[in-house]
Image (tube, rainbow, N blue to C red; front, side, top):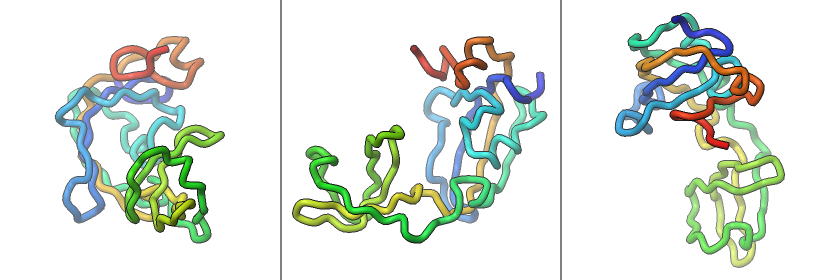
Length: 159
């Protein structure tokens, strides 16, 4: 079965900046499960998966624009320190903040007495990424998965 819209794909990946050492890999854990065509992974990687099948391995370079986007200037924000709880903060740290629009990864730029300056750009924004991918399984999605826009069960979401 080939990968196409509304199919569930389970896969392993290793990601690095192009020409750099790996940043993250799923090799030591369960494969990632996604529903194709619903914006669950970066567009460049999803496009590279099209028409692949279980057992296939491939490598792809994804430019920043098709990954986490280009870095945008003016994305700094000053946030009251209380929103970080008891987390010990330092410049350069990546922290996930709960916002009105869901969780958001930010990078700490400066820690003051009562406020924290953060960069709202995604930590991988502006970076061209290299992926090594192994497709583990491809299956039809259930009607409920398609309706919800994400995978349920093994490797996916549990309600």
